[in-house]
Length: 359
Image (cartoon, rainbow, N blue to C red):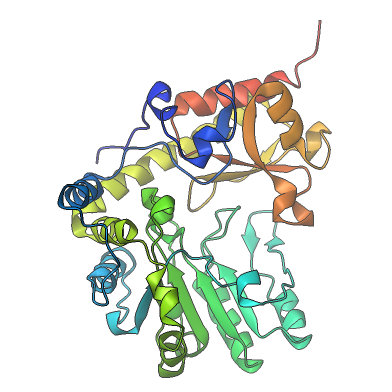
């Protein structure tokens, strides 16, 4: 299996996306969830063909996207979702919170000392106080936690008991490490299929966020009816290039590329463990089960609630600041390791130098 390697820094700096245009050239950008790898070859081919043919119009009413995802889910997760119960939109966050008029009550994960898990009791309290939907991040961002089938089934039962729905954001699912045992929410039980909606996309794994394409997946008549009843504009928000790229990403032709990417991310998450142990032993970090985002606790360094500010100002490394993820993120940073080992090493070395004793 051939690992996927990041592009050279000088080539990456030619990109015009948020990651490479937010900060000056002396800053290493490891904040936003974009990766530094070349596209999977099948995606490049699909997009080149579309540009050559001027295939830049509206998304068609009938596309191969649902079938492509169904095949991907079958191969990667052993899940057989029904393509007839899917509908596309622009991205996984479209309409799930403020745009849908929701009022959010946060229920953080429980830290068990060995990992994180759903706080079922906390969710129960929120439902008892009137919440009618649970927005689940599966796998979780920023911790990279892959929730167990047991906890997902308990969540489904709890939601059903309170007449609530579960919307499972599974955008990071393709990036679950092979030994993590990722479980799609809609597979855990008949109850989960009755109360659940999954929102999926190729955008995180294949770095396609700017192309705008996601799928809403259902598994029961009532949930399917609700999704089909959404305004047609929800589906028209799907990007034509995003759809073409997603079909290529979900094709069997891209499986070997994704497998190689997972090898690289496994190497990188372990590299962070080694670098922190050597250079910042006060930091606390657990290797994530999925994704390319490292959730690092720097409270032991005494750099305040938002250490990313000092790190950006003095080390010239841009990280996502922990408090953006809630009060429990105080003293934490999120580091994007979807890049080269050289950039990761340089970033952590720069950060560690801030704590070095001055002569």
